[in-house]
Length: 333
Image (cartoon, rainbow, N blue to C red; front, side, top):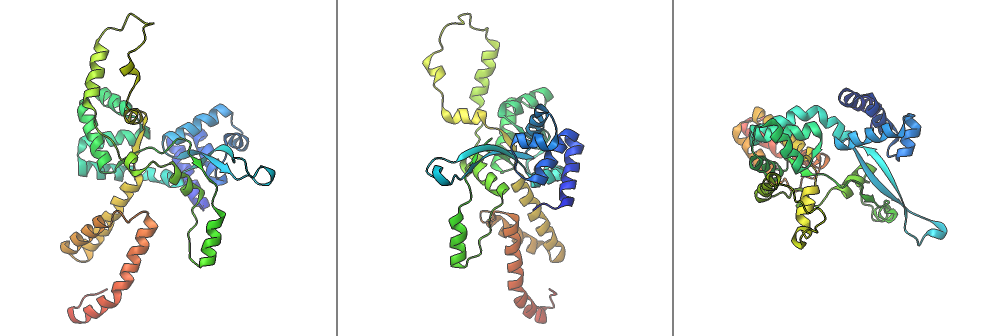
């Protein structure tokens, strides 16, 4: 549950960067939760066109997510499919990440270089872009070639700093009522997911699709040759069969939008803070060991809460041994 101070701070950030209209729609979503567009129009008393444009701005900059909630049907229609309604939800955490953009950019620039940092800056400014839009932006700046831009994007994707955007309107099933009954009967503490977590879990693509990008330099060269060629005079002539048949994987790659992966960037900042703390309290060797441990346990670190609880359990587990060792080697805990 977002606190009132958190809502005010998030609304202030949106107002400063996108204006009052977008902030009003964002505040409506933060205070009331997921809403369909007609409910937003009624609560904000704004014209439907302005509400729609504000929602598009929030979605473009990863501050909101559209989804379809499948409602369970009871009574006589229990055997029929559930009713579906398109709703919109504000992503509070992503809004707060906007104040960390300078830190995210610093991490990428130091690790992958200035060219990757410049490309990453464009994703932070525009929210989400296709490969063609990224290439066109680089051509407008006239700083790098098309092949270099795709190579830099490939580096960012391989480092998990950039990811494929979630599905535009995923179908979210209702929560399973049997899960709570099973957890209660087995006396196991099961953390229930919020609606935002359920939506993003369904919307995010698989790991292979999420971080899959291969630079296609041959296709770019063919496109440049086609631009220089004169247009075909036979307008009514049908295209060849091989022009109509294309690889579905390439079609998905063209249609995919790319955005910054806040989860990975926040993980890098968190690990850097831990390593710097250990380096200040102990020495460089201990910091190197901790950095290797964090890198080895990367696959098991799903979210910040799990990682923090694991570190706390590890600290409490080692305190008795450290106290025993401090008696002989004068180590303070």
